[in-house]
Image 1 (cartoon, rainbow, N blue to C red):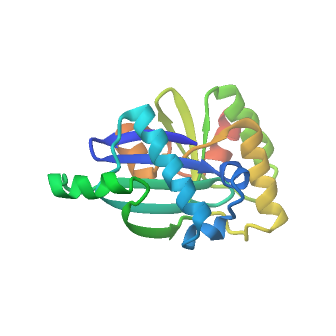
Image 2 (tube, one colour; image 1 turned 120 degrees about the horizontal axis):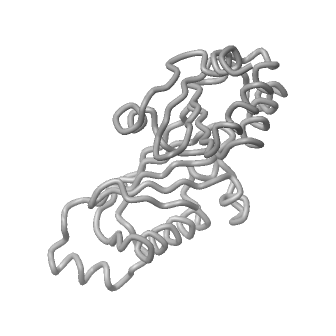
Length: 201
């Protein structure tokens, strides 16, 4: 579980599928009102408070994005400050969060590579597969390779092969395209895998 602050009132939490499995939660459970999901949310808010000092009392807007084969991105935005009377109410039952939850499925596949050599090794293996494409960014001393979508079902063996190669050399990341375009640098706008192989054979 990785937590980062986006602004004073907004944080982003990246949950891998291992994080969910350890807690006995399936991907589909995030769409349901069940105790295990509430426990997970409470755990996330406790960690956000201890790591970032993010106080989750009051109304919260929660956006959950499911990323294929990678996990979930949870964006929590804190609403307006509470009055003293509201704070008394929250002190009575600290485990109750006033949440407005939005759930979305994202097709974005995004992997970070710390080392350029790892990126090249991955590209050479991936270039043997029929899937091309990809956009390469430079961001915070990492190379980020993103695919808008892979044209296979998550259960398709080719899809699994591509994710396996990406996972072997890189690490799944929750950074969005908008953040990369604003704060990073676009290195190869399209067909990144093939372009890397052509220039670094």
